[in-house]
Image 1 (cartoon, rainbow, N blue to C red):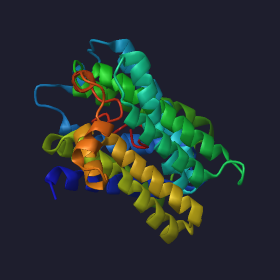
Image 2 (image 1 turned 180 degrees about the vertical axis):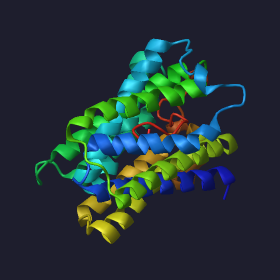
Image 3 (image 1 turned 30 degrees about the horizontal axis):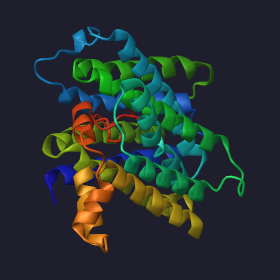
Length: 330
């Protein structure tokens, strides 16, 4: 197994552990207080990830201050939404809805960044959306506020990712990390004051664990992106579905029904195919095609010239590269 894939699998295992611990709080602490402490503690490991030529006290110097601050606001909103979803609905359902983010990323990227998307990617995104419907089954079960906040988390996460694509090449990492964390810590610190409850020693230990695990996960993700292309490590994110099922069953007595299991498989399959490169999909379908590789390649390949444009302008369905879109630890 390539080291980049191993690091990314470890990353999403740590993130899943964070999410399960967050769910364990239930209503004992407010969403604002959970967000405040976890973001504050997650900053500890992140301190050691900055490039040597950058300095934390210069994080406010930016080339696109409006966009970087907008990303901070969307990250704050997505952070609150996903935390509420984790504490109020089953983990597997929260994940399946949050994984709709690539669909919104595609639409935002094509309309705002003018990126090119092939029809095959729309097909796989549609399959993922259908899988989410099978998991949530709207109309056959009661929809809760947690389902809506999970949807909100995917929307805000998509906006965060789209803005990051615009500013990441020219902004310092200390700005890209410091601004979102600052928004989360300051805003939630203010919002939690009216109903502040001092966490117990056990709750403080859990909050510290979330922060340290999440911050370490961010470090591992950076290491993964340095060792393997995004298209190789991106499918590892869908391992969180497996951890959601395991943790949900072990700790929260949550068991998806058979239809939901089918939906989860479709979400994962559609998501993995979506982040694969066109060449990889051609190789896979060429082995399945009854007419041979040439026929499959002709079916899967975009029109002449589209590959060059897509490669030059970027892939809107791929992950952002910083691993923080919608994450509960900033």
